[in-house]
Image (cartoon, rainbow, N blue to C red; front, top):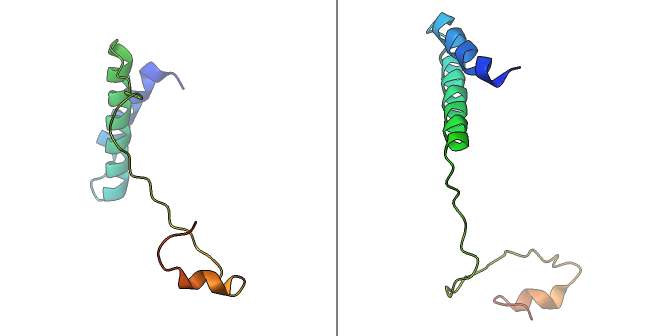
Amino acid sequence: MHPEKYLPELAAEKSSLDPSFVHAVRLLAEEIEKNEGDELRKDDDTKKYLDIISNKNIKLSERVLIPIQQYPKSGSTMGSLR
């Protein structure tokens, strides 16, 4: 489907739908909003970059599940693994 025809077709479909189809109207509105945002991003020439060099401390945490039946001694650590 051609991108220049997509938004007008979505808008026409949304206006032709019966208001009793609440979910369909909501989904069409979200799709229209998403595609309008895509067009704005394409028109905007300024790009935003993420600063990968920063002096901020980053806290990284991950939950690890250990099978107690296979490793019964590791259940007593309760805090950290080494």
